[in-house]
Length: 116
Length: 113
Image (cartoon, rainbow over all chains, first blue to last red; front, side):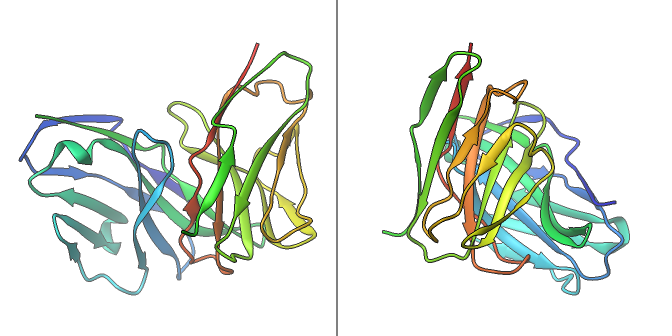
């Protein structure tokens, strides 16, 4: 069975602090994709990154970076020098196959609050 | 600008009434999805459609129905059979394929009393 666990329900930081959001996944597929989405207060989810199971290189995009480690089944997300605009709920998701159907499995999300 | 439009943003209904949530996209995406979001439970898939005139049940389809008569439109009806319909509903679309990122609408918050 596929599963995504985001153990951190809520994180609060002060602006300019670095923060890491954890994501642990379970899957029996040898080929899979991992995603991160951001849900600001407006409600829509915004796609941040996609990573396939064969590419374990870390990725950096501005203040955002992602650490993918197959050995620990983790795909953690770090925000450097956090800003108030980073306040949102962040979802990790796994592209999996269930009953011959492809589907996206979401974690329960981590609410990040960045205080000025 | 291309995107997904969900309407209305807030919807109130009395128990026992069916209600239809609208979702329109102009991204020319083949696949469309409906998710339900409840506090602390993440997103759960209700229905999805990979092509016009075809759709499949997701994990929590009971009490819901959909149609896909046009590529751009994927309305969701919450029927009176849905036992706990109050939730935040998100529509999404993507190009074909499981690895394609989803594009989401702004959601509809449905309250049933």
